[in-house]
Picture 1 (spheres, helix red, strand yellow):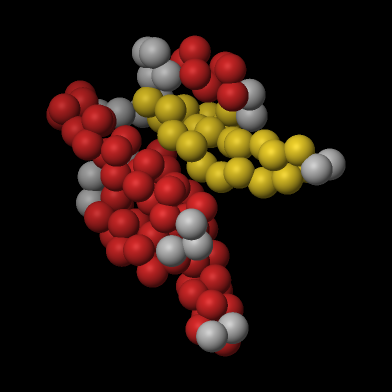
Picture 2 (cartoon, one colour; picture 1 turned 135 degrees about the horizontal axis):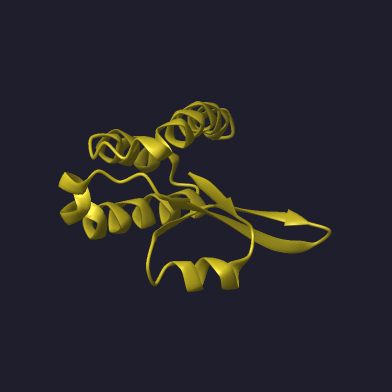
Length: 108
């Protein structure tokens, strides 16, 4: 997995590669989105790319809307696709989401 910090580069690469949005954060009051390029895709999984990409996009949208429980549910589905380049990303997000869910419960 390669990390991309440039939105224009991500859009250009998306024409020929699997590009996924990972996160958006602020630096010096500017919003920055980071992406990843998945370059190790098994031939037998090529037919799953569009479905996986759509499910990952749902994950990102739920995350941005702070719907953390839905994100956790989607991670388990996303991992079943076997795109191992992003497995560690989903592991990190699982830990982050557990904390965010706890924080949400405390703030209710």
